[in-house]
Length: 464
Image (cartoon, rainbow, N blue to C red; front, side):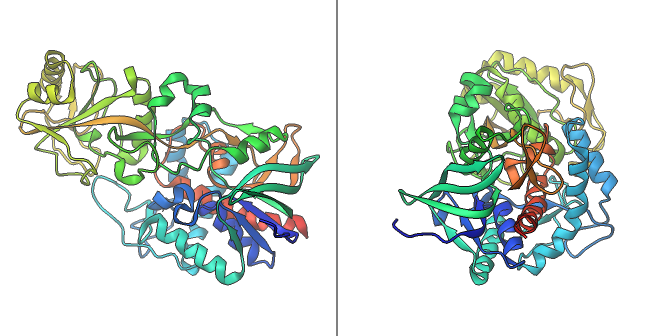
């Protein structure tokens, strides 16, 4: 590519929700903006392509959310899943700003569907995008084009020109040709490093080879690594991530939301030894589904199995891959290649421990176990009604939490504690400030939207 690029006001690295929120926010304040998206057009937008909703604070019912979801309840939910490992100032900023984001998104053409009921338990807390994340980002891209935002595809940032924490230019490989793009401010919104198996292995060892990357294969952490090498201060634990249970038959990369299995709370989960290892009914699914990737990663060969019977098999969304079905636990064990005698004992012990109550998969019910380890706190039903169904599970990594430390203005903090004057971050690349561990359904899109807007606005202020 022989083209000479002008000096832009803002260069945004990344092409997902956070990046486009930053680009739109900067452009609407009069800045010239260029977006470097490392994926080709049909794969643009990173993990946002697979998103479905964002978690939204609201004081009263809305057209798409029921009841109310207050700041304090939202914050309490976040503290619970992170076990207090969060920057409380930034967390509260994200929560408070989420209520404003809904109106902003609607003004920018994003459409939402009516609240959902059932096992997701999200009708009060999460607004679902009509058409999913792909419709959302397509809407943003269309508006960006109308406003004159330039988007470069197949554009990987390979080097950063910085001096004393101040951004000057970026070296970008565009369709295989190397170009220099100069800009007055830089927004890093290029995601985590979950698709970089070598980097994952630094934290997880050989176990990382068995991880499934449910999101984009383009999030390899290139921009994150470049900024860390340039003196940016890191935040978060490299082994912490948004990791769920996905079907072990899913593709290695980019399987998306359909590879997730929601059967886990309704039956038992065993490892390859045929033994249970965690409370399947500990809490509502949106607060616990993202712990299961890590739990499975800690099991032998990073594999586990969800087992349900016909009483609950139809209570969750259909899986992308058909269940293995059998008329007996012994037969199911053979299909799953599990030790049949051990699995039979596991199921018998579980069944004997079940304390019957009023089963209700839409709330925290009183069906639990007594006298088995681990106990099951809710939704405990005997596995006694054939046919029985089994699903193989692997850890499915969505995004990593090691990232860039930022302040409430979205500015990247340097190792000396000072804020980089014209470098900002948004989305997964800085989510570790708020998500020290655990995950709360929909909060990733909330962080991306809130800090995308903050970063875009901050970049404009920096050049003024």
